[in-house]
Image 1 (cartoon, rainbow, N blue to C red):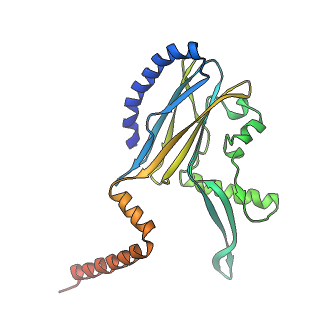
Image 2: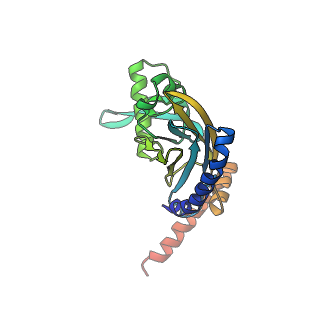
Image 3: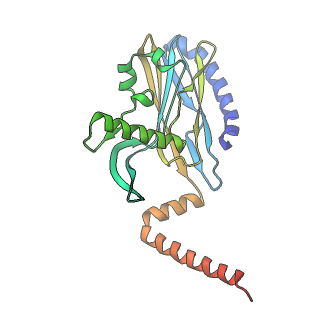
Length: 253
């Protein structure tokens, strides 16, 4: 991916962090320090996805869990059924405040790091992700809609299928790579890093990450959202002109 090349400078930052923490940790006893190799994922023409390195250090032995959430939005789901030989929408569900992107990584399997109440309160893992269904329904129906939503997000590459790995470099330093697909939604992302010991959260840190369109992509995106009517007219005119030019190019003499 395009972002892989950007990870090399981050290794220099990691080395600098090693030196700094070698002095700072014993004196200040900071439980957790973490940062990102990039704080901006820039989407330009030809964007092919990106990898962002998260790295840091902890003061003592323990576990690290990283949770990344994209901007929240309402998600409408439809269920199709065959009626008289035609597939139509026969049911509809609306989930509120759904993370547009979800990623989790851990130094060990989540069930070995903490009990379910701790995992649930911090939404560590897809099983613990809170997805609120606006419709009234029985628990079984809610679970069916919930599973369908997660499957759709995984199919789009926006939700991890399995927790990724946080790798320790020695006793204190750690790292993991957060991957963003080509269709990653724009907006402000929240990166939560947790340091746990014996199933309890010792320290936590939140780092913002911005995913934004730049250049021509950004101008078209802003124009389409700020002036939807004009954008629609321009798109129709462009399509008509393209069709007319195509007709002239391929018509028989």
